[in-house]
Amino acid sequence: MIERCICLVCLDAPGGMELSDTNRALQLLHGGGCSKNGANRWYDKSLQFVVGRDGTCGVVCEHSPFDGIVLVQCTEHLLKHMVKTSKKMVRADSVSELPAPRRLRWKCSPEIQGLLASSAEKLQQIVKNLDFIVYKFDDYGKTFIKQQKCSPDAFIQVALQLAFYRLHRRLVPTYESASIRRFREGRVDNIRSATLEALRFVKTITDHTATVPDSEKLLLLKDAIRAQTEYTVMAITGMAIDNHLLGLRELAREVCKELPEMFTDETYLMSNRFVLSTSQVPTTMEMFCCYGPVVPNGYGACYNPQPESILFCISSFHGCKETSSTKFAKAVEESLIEMRGLCSRPSCATGKPLVKKEKVTRPSQGHQP
Image (cartoon, rainbow, N blue to C red; front, top):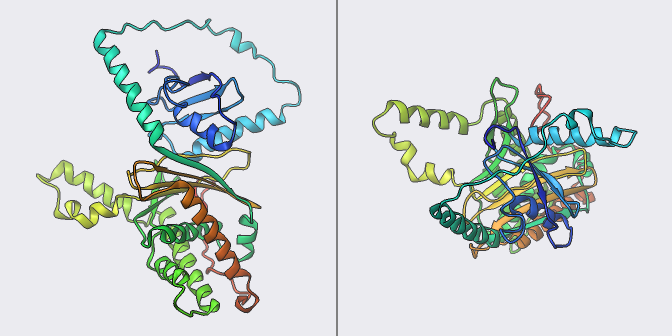
């Protein structure tokens, strides 16, 4: 019955925590563990609508069948319908035609009971290990960034690179999802944000021993934003490398006795360990998306640029001593403030756009460069 159903509705008991954005996001992600609502999920289901008695509500998405933009559009459609409905929302006649709900009876052998107990223990370990924070940067938003004649997404991506470099003194393979829904059966490709131009900028801006004028730092920032924007345009028009290489690798699995050396090379393997996994998920309604890291020593960074603020959902694991979601959020704040300072200094103002304009026919849905 669960496999056949369209979606699940999870009716949660109160989480017993302050209803901050961070705590509400955690309740959706894992329910607070098996002592709270952790067992009230079925993670193989594509859509789980969570409604809590304390007012927490949202959707848990299993990523295989669709991407974040689809979930956002679905949820915004529902929210706008609720807002626009002038009369009080009433029980639809079609609901009363549904069969009455009934409790599912489970036959659990001692072996299954043992597996359930071990699964509960694993869930608790995962819950305790997740280091997660929702951080709202409210010094400025995409309005200011657009005034600099550049893409808000490219600007934020460079800020994320600078934040990571501040903490770890290096750049790492970075994933940013790029929608390729303009193509038939298109899903996403990858924007690799750790560019050489970004590395030059972050090295210069963090080197306090060098006397580099602000005008030169601004030029390096412009160059990093330009490189990021150009890669974004390549990705959304089907010219990035990751899907192409993935297709070749999977074909090789089918037709070759053993994988070509390229796909077992350490450089290739390392380039696919995305220590920084990022995604822009903009919304027009009051909502946000979040997810966890994809490697044990990594960060997840989902962000939602608004006109006068930027909302970040930062995740990592307590089990890695090198990472800290709180420190990363602070580094993002410092980076965005410093980048604004560079753009705002009168001596640096040239009146020229930070990036060269590219004419691209954009899809109606998905990532906007």
